[in-house]
Length: 165
Image (cartoon, rainbow, N blue to C red; front, top):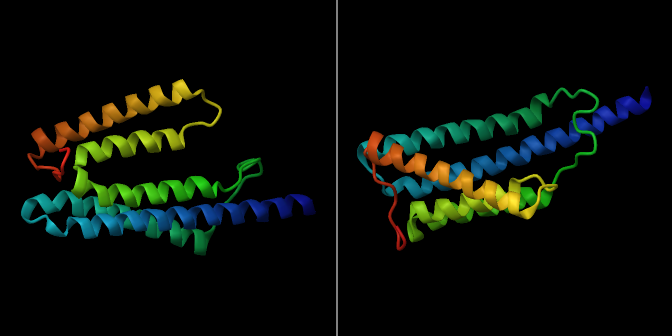
């Protein structure tokens, strides 16, 4: 019984760390988007601000959840799972570079590279490389085309332009 309680405490600590790190990463991305959106004016600013508010709220929620409430764990939830710091750092740095590169390279070019890279980073490690590449390409194409159609035809709002579009 003591071993089970010790395992539960250890699992909750890992969950707390994951929530806090994820929250900090989301907050960082929302702050970067906020500072990058300062040159947008009028109605075009509405959609980015809504996204920024949702991102920041989600980040604050995760940090608060990690600090205050913790996570109710059921034995077996995190069996064999540990915090992958390399993945967290890769996603955080990639997100910051993505936000900074949008105004230089352009939204669609940067988003295509970012989504493909993140799909590859987040893919199941047991999958073959060809499956990761195929899934990344499919995910990137569907999402980029959807964003293009929504921004161009539904919202009629231009995306940030850069050297490559």
